[in-house]
Amino acid sequence: MIILPAILSNGGNISDLSAAIQNPSDYGISSNLFLLVMLGTFAITYFLFAVLVKPLHGRTVRETINGRKQIRWDRIRMGIIVWGIIILADTAISLLVSSPGEYEFRFNTGAFLPLLLILLLVMPFQTSIEELLFRGYLAQGVARWTKSRWWALIIPSVLFALMHLANPEVKEYGFWLSMPQYLIMGLMLGLISILDDGIELALGIHFINNALTALLVTHEASALQTDALFLLHDLDPVASLISISVASILVILILQRIYKWDFGIMNRKVAAVPPPPPPVEVETIGQSPAT
Image (cartoon, rainbow, N blue to C red):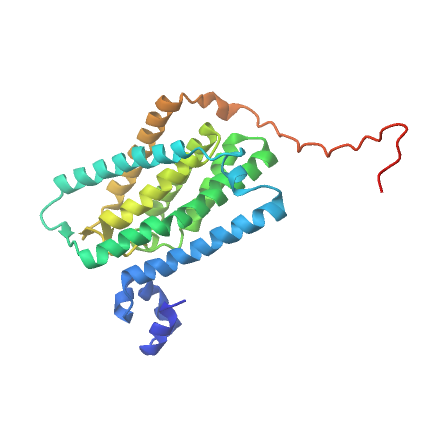
């Protein structure tokens, strides 16, 4: 990893790695470069998944997304639009009701434009591989194993939350205020994916959530230390928890109205679809096999 040589060259040791992640500039590494390297690991994971999922599990990336042969791109766009509007509205309200000095505006063209480029080109791999693994591959496996949509919702959502256990927000604000936010996000994305029978909406929501978070507001304990437009000096974790809860309920209700989902499907047993039988070779009477 590129940050490690910088730590050692400055007389540090491996124990300084955690601090370097939060303050890469202290080791002569720009936040954009560090973000690019971090997101690049997810891009590598994505391509490994795309290559291995077919020979190991007999399915393609498209089939992991929705069990079909075609990706519903309109769903991805809808997820981006609806969740993007909610995030922008929430950010605008927070700025309007904030006290003086709570937010620091710090637009820097030289840093912001490369950040935007990184988010558009590389971040989709990070959010996509997380959705493919949790709301796609894992949820499908749990559904086949348990025959229950509830377990297919709960188990991947809990594991998704636990994946963020090492994030600096958890250390700064405590387990019981930080982890529920990841769990709520996972439950919202999982429920939408089950109701819509595919993860395209979740792909769009997850991408625009992370992209706008990196672009608009950052804070000292954020896992995404970027040159965002605003620096929040005093994050209220309770208000943040309430905000993500309200936003998640709102997006579910909006999308349910658009796509006419039936919430009752959650209580129906998952019907396992057997693989197609192998083709049967029929020998024509009176003819010998070709040589």
